[in-house]
Image (cartoon, rainbow, N blue to C red):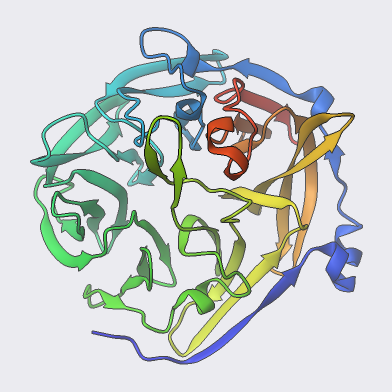
Length: 405
């Protein structure tokens, strides 16, 4: 089934420098430089038998608070850097711990479903006959190895009292599958393209964002490919954007960050195809949808400062927040200005804090009135100007904390 096209509204949402109303609103929002207040909590990915020697594998892909702990995703499925301990930071004990090691090359996302924490196994170190999801139940991780042919398990979500997952099988095709018994058995629902997929619940529907036009599952539970949601509609004023990478929903707003297509790098070792959120050749963008209805699609792009790159977007009880970075060079040294901006209104995203660091912050979360940041890196000098960081930065994987302003 194909959804029909409808009225589409898209525009830039300007930062304060481009909107007089935003200037007025954001001038009343205090911003704080927290560089001197930052507490370095350390890097759990550099210690013990599962330490990651490659900085790229120490990227903190995600930080999620769950039951008084903050769970961290890391790894690198391109370079096969598993297995992956499911590290968490315990703020009460002020230390990093793990209780389970996943036989995966990378952990990139977590989802809270029915008061339990799930993570999909992106690249299992086991037979391709089955794929894995992992569930934290009563402080114990359970491996659910039941997803048929799940070479890569990209995402997991709950919708209409069912679990939904997107996998890639050895035939190099994507599949939307569903389970009515908490992952014990699965049914194929829809064939998809081969690209990694991200799922988000919005407006009483489940959206499956793949490369190209997304799919929508509504009350009928029959997937509909939204032909009207092409790249121009999903990513207005951003010709390089190809797919939704990160999402956050607050009330009637869906915020998302785009990613670009893969690029090919000729290295001294070989020719490699990389999945890099490269802000030079494939800059990510930040977008707000207030409606994805087929007859009333409302999508806006947030126009960041020229060199400001969005990395993460989250929801808290106070609203939507985006983490960005901006490279600056002074006195012969490269520094990164990392910012947190809050969506006071779809048109008004105001800076609330910033800090300088030798590399950029890739992820953030807020817990007990404190901000946590996970430092990251790009591939480094071997990939030339394509790399956002000149080197694969050794601080990648460092966790920072500061009180909320």
